[in-house]
Amino acid sequence: MLDATSILPLTVDAVSFSGGGKQLLQPNSFVIPAGGLTVVLGPNGAGKSLTLRLCHGLLNPSRGAVRWADAPGGQHAARRQAKRHAMVFQKPIMLRRSVEANIAHALAASGTAGTERKARTQQALARFGLAERAAQPARLLSGGEQQRLAIARAWALRPELLFLDEPTSQLDPAATRQIEELLTVLVAEGITVMMSTHDLGQARRLADRVLFLHRGRLVEDAAAASFFAGPQSAEARAFLAGELLW
Ligand SMILES: Nc1ncnc2c1ncn2[C@@H]1O[C@H](COP(=O)(O)OP(=O)(O)OP(=O)(O)O)[C@@H](O)[C@H]1O
Image (cartoon, rainbow, N blue to C red):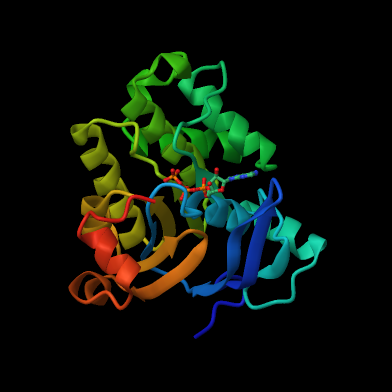
């Protein structure tokens, strides 16, 4: 049965983006239904970050539309949906405050009131193994810990859909593993995840579905198993063979 309150599916309808006098994204279309982990894969400069930013509403499409729950867009509807999706960046932006205050501040900014804010902050600290670090300045955490905090902070907002832009590209293998395990658990708990990576191993480990981008064009949209077993395009075959650099 369809959940009448859900923001999903996310429909990206012929969305293109131009900047600096260049067309950076071709008119791409895809749908993200509820559940699972979709990897946006492609070489450097393919348009992965732009695609996530357009979906999250940080950029406006030059043409085309991003729709939630198959409803016609509109500023008002978009604003109401905003709290139901969250984004984690390659290099987490930490406020010059404690670990705990970083989570509490995100909740306050999203309009979560006092008691509920405190409860959710404590829950997020415990859930992501950060309780002992609660009072420390967030900027003194290691890269892996900061990314864990960034995910905890996003999780505290109770997103239905979590966007992550190359969340482990700055991390060592152990920290990367930890974040990957965390994401697997979040997906199992029902959060829909859409993340970009150019790391093929990571895509193989995590993806249920792959959106493969090359030079701003969505070249393949496939179940991960079939993408890796038999990519349909010459570009994807070259990328999987390590021969497509940009
Ligand atoms: N606001 C902008 N104005 C002009 N060019 C831009 C803008 N944002 C991104 N670009 C360019 O668009 C292209 C796609 O950028 P994007 O960051 O989406 O790539 P990506 O696939 O995420 O790459 P990477 O894996 O290197 O992070 C790049 O060539 C980038 O330089």
